[in-house]
Image (cartoon, helix red, strand yellow):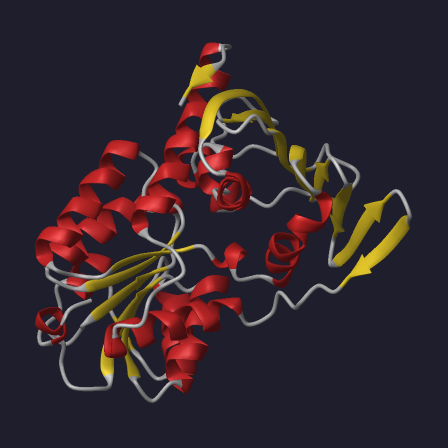
Length: 334
């Protein structure tokens, strides 16, 4: 941020409008309430009843529509924590109203829309921050710090499988609301790209299961993607959830010429010719609070952020290549 953009803000505390009342919104609200630099003034949610309870909990005013919230003169910063489908539209309206914006990934479900939003934020001299807390987590930080110990990397595998029986009829089991699996779950690709750089080709296969063909909610999805990085590293990403997946998995493996790093859940292991050695892995707790605090530091002191919108956009382009690969049945050049 620049001094000129900071002048567009009201004096501290910054007045924040929140769109959403789910898990991420609750964690954001708790952080905003605890930080003296911010005042949570308004919340717009999906249902009036749930939004009213949320507002009572956090001392905010309920706004019936996000369209009203983002244009309110009493809001300086808009935090978007709602269904993926609506991220782009809300961010655009907020930026057009000259508000600073925090949005959970993905920025949008359409690459062209995301590109236009980044350009709009620059034109409006407003902050556009796309959250990627996976980069702040203990597992990713431990993995990144340990990479030099295994030499030149040639293969990585990242699998997250979540059995749910019964599958909930929630927005994250809805193709339109959640988006293509690796767009909705963009962090599965972003961690690999943060570690290994740009991608040359993508090959992806995706399967959905539904009880009824006309029901917009699926009961399971499985997405398997192979990435070839420009530096020659091969990687495989498996993302699945739902009723017909029976074994949970959260595992990240990186194999190199001098050993391997195995992150299984919250446990880390370095495997080398001489044996197996534990890796200290930090906590996954408090990451939304850390992300929020870093944004506030950036807005008030111009300190650097850990992620740029352009970096998130690049991963979105890779996810879109995976979508096209799954739909067209062919390898896609990125």
